[in-house]
Amino acid sequence: MPCLGGARFVFNSLEAPVSLRSLYSSFTSSVSTTTRLVPRRAFSIMANSHNDLFDYTSGRWVFNDALRRAERRLVFDVEGLRRLAAQSVGRSPADVVNLSKLAEGGFNRTFLITLRDDFQMVARIPYPATVPKYYAVASEVATMEFLRSSGLPVPQVYGYSPASDNAAKTEYIFMEFVRGTKLSDVWLELGESDIVSILRQLAQLESQMMSISFPAGGSLYYAHDLEKVAGRAAIPLKDERFCVGPDTRLPMWYGRRSQLDVDRGPYESAEAALVAAARKELAYLEQFGQPLLPFRRERRDGYQYQEQSPSAHIENLKRYLLIASSLVPRDPALGHFCIRHPDLQQSNIVVRRSSDSGWQVVSLLDWQHASILPPFLLAGVPQRLQNHDDPVSQSMTPPSLPENFDELEETERTAAEEVYHRRLVHYHYVTNTEEYNKPHCDALTDPMCVLRGRLFNHAGNPWEGETLELKVALIRATERWETLTGGGAPCPVAFDAEDACETTELNEVQRKADKAFEVWQNMLGLGPEGWVPTQDYEEAVALCKQMKEEALTEATTEEERAEIMAHWPWDDMDEGKYM
Image (tube, rainbow, N blue to C red; front, side, top):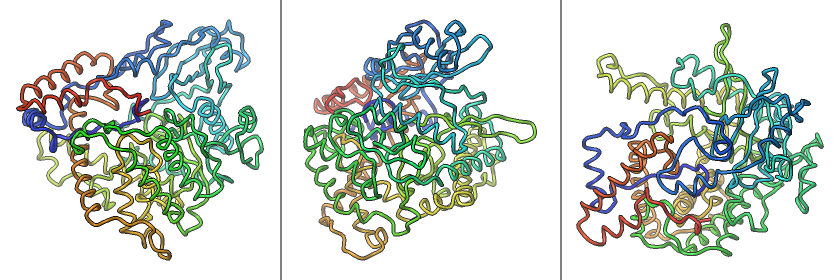
């Protein structure tokens, strides 16, 4: 999705126009693929002027920079926020001595508020482009409070408003400031025993949260917040303060999808959860669909730079809906509704060290867009902990350093240590999940877990000019039908052998495109959507411009030059048609 922090970039050097292939070769022949041409640096301390409170100051983007910053600029009533913060903890506004920016993420800006007795709290404000605004705030608050009441280490909420009709003139959440260290700040410095201990604690916490059963799928709310939204169905929990209501996952609401009158939950069955997002996307394409070039410009060469009709994706969505009911596992333990952290990564985990017990997980942050789904749809190694592309991790072989490690050059030792670290994390997350969270392990080790997840996600994700990933998953489903469904009814979907072969070939082309563009992004020091720290922005933009000029110089035909000019991955682009 072309907005607010989704990592989707990857570039094709192997299948690109000749000039881009040559340029790639000239760079990679002299620069290691692990070397960053623009090194990433640590964030600077946040400034505190009013404009800095309103603006995004943590970084810039090498393309569509003005759009990205506009999405994140929010003018609010600073004094109003200070007053509301003080009231939320029973204090006078005069007790507030400082309000400063604390952090900026993909969807929210957080502020640290300090009172006279050194009491500190956090204010969290969503960006203007964050969706679904009311539901996202209301659901996150209810999720945090419910999990906290269930014994999970989650910040206490002091006050909130899911609407902007208040003294601060913005939606907000006031919450506990948890003292400790972000795991991301110490992750690469931890010893092996500390890593294993933290992964054990995370598996135990996931077991605790995933063992809570819900009467339906969707997202969690306070009942009184949904009562304020006319016509929204809700299914109450035993604690009737809480209820399950509409699913807040971003793909359900992205862009013009928020205008659609479609079922977003609560889901009363696993099958209902499987089909809702696909039906939403089908409704979107039938109302707003138009031919598009793939949003990911690095993949356009695979389509000969031709616009793709939404009709192919519509056809594949209908194929998915034909098989969706058969994707529910026969094991009833995998079909109940549960909750899991929506983005379990190191920057959302707070740890604290003690002399007698080492590093302890003391809080899990950022519950926005959390959803309640069956475990077979929630299962997986968290993105920042997984190492699926490595055969050693795939086989769950205990990791070890190379036997000749001590004889390696320094750069080789560093590379070997990085590989070992990734394997270690993946291995111990899975083994601890096996020991402490059997339901998740059962879903995780189901041979069809990955395929079910791909079908579900690709069918529900916003269409961005490609249907390839969904089609590949559908073809795989027809090939593994008996294993996927346990036998019984024949598969209602079939693909022509030639069509399946061509799809597989295109998928391989795009796989190379993805891998090569990832190398480019890493070499340039770019994050998702071309993000760089502010202090690196000018250097990164200049380097991207230089690369484009060299590509144009090396182009041998006007057609190649036109393709470079129209589809260069780091130029500004019109994203409106993809919304």
